[in-house]
Image (cartoon, rainbow, N blue to C red; front, side):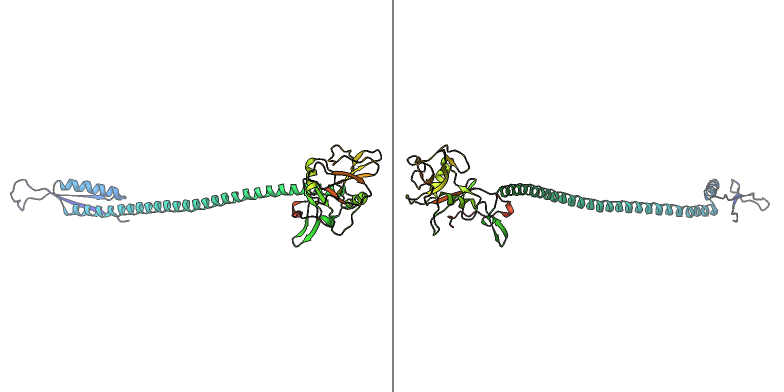
Amino acid sequence: MEEELCYSTVIFKPIDNEKPTESEETALYAEVKRKESTLHTTSETSAAQCSLKESVLPTKDCLTEEKGASTLISPVYRRAAVFLGLLCFLLVAAVTAVSIFYYIHMSKYNNILAQQTKERATNLQLLEVLEQEKAWLVTQGQQMNSTLDFILHKSRFPVDKYCQSTGNGVRCTSCPQNWIQNGSSCYYFHWPTGHPWYNWKASKEYCEEYEAHLAIIDSEGEQEFINQHTNTDPQYGYWIGLFENAGKTWVWTNGTPLETGFWINGPTEGYKYCVVSMPSKNPQKSWKSESCYSQNKWICEVEVLTWPTFLQAQQNHSNPST
């Protein structure tokens, strides 16, 4: 790199206004210095020299030097300003990008949170439904076991008297067809509809075909129910499950001795006597003893059968007939 030289000339003039003569010599001083390697040192040196010289007499060279220094310094500030502006732009862009990123992810987070809340509510509803289904299945299982136990204790079970096939599948009633439910029992009242009347033994066998028995009446409420469903013909009664055994003791078909009776005038003493329930305005006075060989209508009784819910059908409460 070539070295730049700075030349400066200093002229000393007489103080007075006298013109110098030709013989007088003017003193000239010249100074030569090497320019430093760095711009800052050169500028400071030139500025110092020019300040010293300008204190005596400004020169054209110093003015040129100052102008050159200004020209050299200005691009540095411009570059710094550009750099700072670019840095600010990048910072603003970074903040904007982070804000957008935060907004997008917060939106996704809120959407996911809302979806999870919705799914949680749905899961709770499903759990509640499952608990209900579980309770229903437990109940169905208990009913199935009860029904199965009831059937197994019967020597023969007339399933066709309880269950019928429909368009919606098999439906079963708590009582056989044409029987009437009262509390925990089902009752069959044989009315004269063209079928023959039976003696006490034949009536008992008819009931046994349904795994039932002749009615066993052990309460006033049951007697009132029996009386409400017998016809109004006072001459004919209905066989019930009460009879006189060989020991002249009144017992029911299940072997239980009679405790409370609803006699009209008291029982007739004698062997092979059975009891009919007569239609009466006073249910508490309805029983009459007759020969077990007499022909009468009859009343059968059987325990209500509880089927699983999915097999249950509406009970038919119409008047029974055979």
